[in-house]
View 1 (tube, helix red, strand yellow):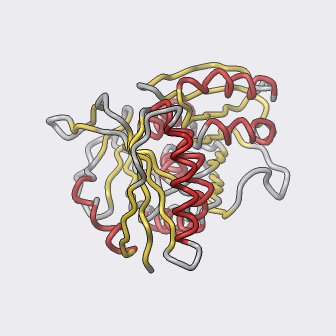
View 2 (cartoon, rainbow, N blue to C red):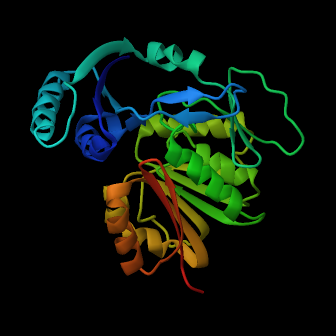
Length: 300
């Protein structure tokens, strides 16, 4: 199968607006925001450079591809009058080309105190205390490199206790669901609207031998059956979190925690207000560059 990779560069304040435009035309709404990073000398981490971000999405090559590209160009041209956005770049590539071209730049990543993200094609010798997550994102999004993913992983490490139930909304590659399971969650439900990501997430669950703990389901909130969870994590974007504020609050068990991320600083107050109105109380706000992660509790 062939794809069109569409991308632009923009400042961080424009990233969410561009993501919203891309989501209207990308395959199942999948959009990636790539930060400029610099690996640390020891390979244990990364620093984020003060440069524009790259927003990417993928469109299948079919009869509608040309019309989608023209609609994208028009919408981005309008946005460029308000914020600096580079012209749209379009690149044709085969699915296997996308899956393999970036692998040489993806290394073992240490997050928080114990979590270690290990690409499936790399070797790693675990140290005492390492919590290993083996990952192959495929064409899904969620490698652990983005600051919002890293912050969610750290919040899960601080929050998930053995025996808990966890819901991951917009699971992407499944990285947060895998982390929750590795941290001791008894059951994890992960939902995702993108069928490509669902396939990748299920493969990663099998890769880690966690099929008895994690269920990957295509879909979103509200869930088809009533259910509540000790921990809910939603690493998506501000607009979607606001739209899902009440359904998100509804699936948090009394005394439970919602971790909401993928939020640009300028949108944080709006997201916080919508979740407060839905019945959740802010307990922690983490800021990493221009990105915010909110941890909120439901009263017992």
